[in-house]
Image (cartoon, rainbow, N blue to C red):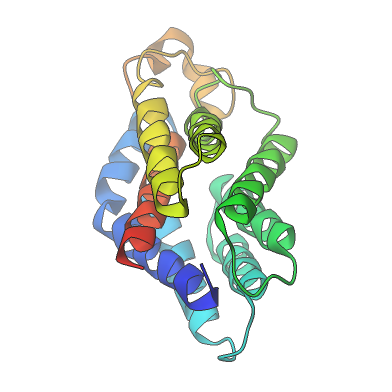
Length: 210
């Protein structure tokens, strides 16, 4: 993937988030602040504007870092810093590469996960976006180890994230505002895990289109 492909990922993620903003907000209303979809929609809209403002010769790292900074600046609550950190760590991981191959994208996703875990201090099973991101990265790495190409790796990550998000439904939240609900947090999909699945689906879609 080159810089244009990654910019396409940000644009497509913004489209999917915007189209699903009301559902994400409903999920968040059940166990959180009730603003996740609207917040993330605003953040990705800003990310698209930031990416579009970059010079045509901007490298892949600049695309990811610019998107991450924009999301931090425009997304309220915890999700802004978490998604912003993920994208900025991914950008730093690809460094000055002009093109991101399957291995480099895997390293970027791993760096994103590490950044999210460092900031949020969440583990698998806490009912957070990490519950989608961990299986996504694991699925990507497993596909890569099996010799899959970038498109197949990204599709595996998207499937892993979707399954991880679905698996948050029966969990009791142990982090964030949802944890205040105790047992009442069960029976609802975590909104952060759900949006993570959307964003990784956008990545898979873009690699297919490319």
